[in-house]
Image 1 (cartoon, rainbow, N blue to C red):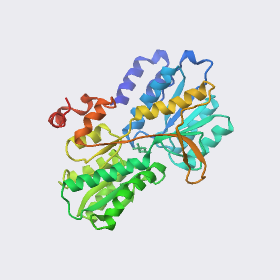
Image 2: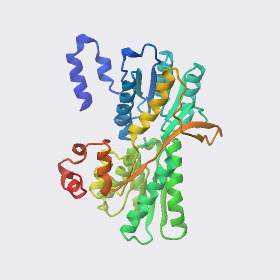
Image 3: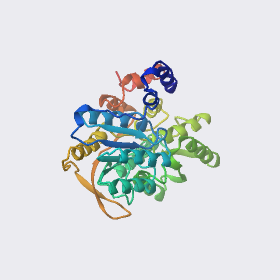
Image 4: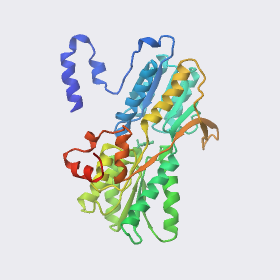
Length: 366
Ligand code: BGC
């Protein structure tokens, strides 16, 4: 639909020669005029399918932060393609960016890009995902183990509310190539493993979803449910994977009876919560994450030494410390969907469409 509109607009704009810019809605070079003495920043986002955030939220908040500082930024999205990721990086490096910020598609290709940037004297920031062995200058993310703990606890709370007796729990993990997925699993398994061990819960099927691919997640969960009809709870690592499970549960008339977790407070995830099909999500204030990363990049691009990294994390592979900013995630259930709206991350209009009007009123969203 959106592409169709762009195509139409392009016809009208033939004479201006701006078709390429129009068609490429993932790139947003601000072309700021006040930035002549300051360096430019390049940002590479991973895809637009694994989560709403990469196509919508992160580019919006990042652009706003750089625009406000009068720093020129080129934000591009690799659309899940590792070759494309490298090509974008090469372009940014040769265009003379002073800072390169990446969300890697996997640590290997991420490291190759960071190495090239470093060799060209460009400062590097790992945004949201740590590139293992990548030795970026800075890392900005959330406390991702905490994200997982909130998911695990959310599922425990929903199963307890359901008075579930020895429920079989299935786990749909994120991409095995994403260090965050490892940290999320570490967090939720620290809550679930003791429950499996003491017999309160029964450990069911557990699988990684390559590239966080939502379609594959549906296929995987369908197989899980076919071979284990007794599944009574689903730990899904983000809202997209959660929605894939909910779609399968709906087909089996089990939605609403089997709690499913999520992450990212996407419009779809929040609506699934209001509908009673999803137990919880984890809200990560992307604006804060974008602002923190932009603050580091802006300092470097302005020729200053950043002072805003508040801590450091140890890269589990290289054992090197990476100066970091790690923000705090928040658990969201039906009663607190309104908090995400109040924080300005999502509008009431986006969530409370006709189908959800009553659920919104019931959840105190006015
Ligand atoms: C991010 C999540 C996102 C997932 C899939 C993770 O690295 O932290 O917010 O849902 O990737 O894109």
